[in-house]
Length: 66
Image (tube, rainbow, N blue to C red; front, top):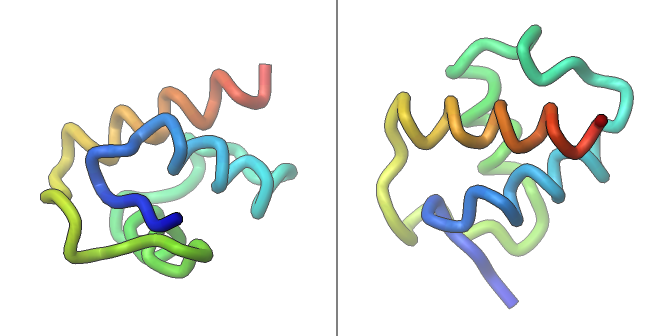
């Protein structure tokens, strides 16, 4: 099932699974957006992306590591 920009928790979980050894805060927003767009089943046309969404993803991704 596909998911989009509004599914920040799912995005964070998928990023953690795809990049378990990456510090979320070491990834710039441009790179983070690219990483998200490359996730399996991600629908880039669903929802809107902006700085607040990317910050939320970073925070939730960091929480997945802890």
